[in-house]
Length: 435
Image (cartoon, rainbow, N blue to C red; front, side):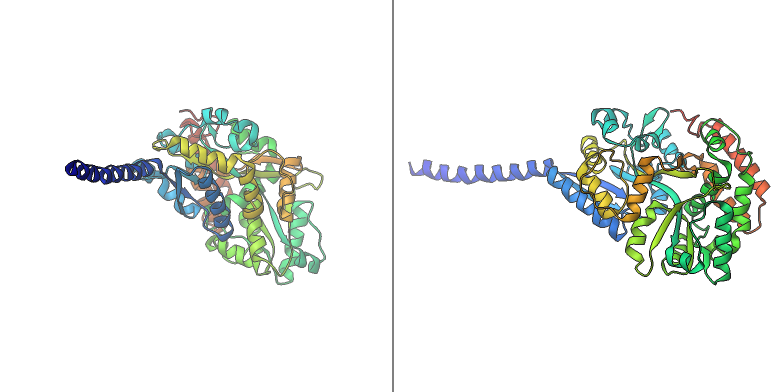
């Protein structure tokens, strides 16, 4: 009997130990780590995304978010080789334009989310722009976020000092700029060093002088860019207005241009997309910022405004956790709780398309939301999303060359037209893209 008891005492701890060990293994297997690369590294962005990630992990206790943040320039550079090498993230937040996303789609590294849009009810929950801007070849490749448009930020104190009002035409804006220059202000805080700066100034000037019809036809229907207003738009933005910008604009980056405006040295910020709102909120306390749409040549013409999704979420086609990745996008983009955080903390406009009660919006964000959803202006997707890859690269480089006198406006338009025709032949425009 004593031998039996001894045997029982020896087996019991062993069984318990095995059960504990098995529990540890099962628990480890039940925990998924979702690797996410995004662009949320500024304080207001990090605060918002950390709140949303914490909420998601509470809702999905078996999933942990391993997030790496990086600037848009770095993301655009590293994501393609990382995906090709199998070292990329499960979920990425990056550019949704054809120049960036098209090659990744054709390489098979981005997950097709067309079915997820239907199964998760995103078509009913989200604003259609978040789907349309990231649809290529008739399939949907993610969810567009940060619904934005480009306008002009202005220093209300400087405008009062100059005795001027919001301009109703291009000519009136030029008169304000001349007056600001005479009074020792920088009329327009802008530089052309970063590619997005070129797009965010030159593009709205083209839309303003060319108009929606010809711009739409050239962007989406195989039309020509050799239309009335095109050369004038390039001449104004890259030659005639050089005196209005920060000195040596071709060498000035976005941060330097921002600083000139934030410090109260500039009357206007001409490439002020709505993404600037949280930066105005967090960096400017000495004056009030206003925002108006780019005017047209004629004061009676309705503004034609560059609009798009700033970036968007995509999923790696090779992820081992597709369901968890889709759950993550579903929470961040298609839940009212997350939408409130995007609006109130990040000060970005998410694609959530349903009313939110008692929403606390920054005054400029309220104006932006009203304009985007209230039909106040004509919005047309910007060139940063539609230009084929080589044309996309050229717009930035070519803009700098026109500014520095290395290329004429006529030469720019000829090369721009040639690269769009090349992009169409290669199936790398919105109307020609095929899988």
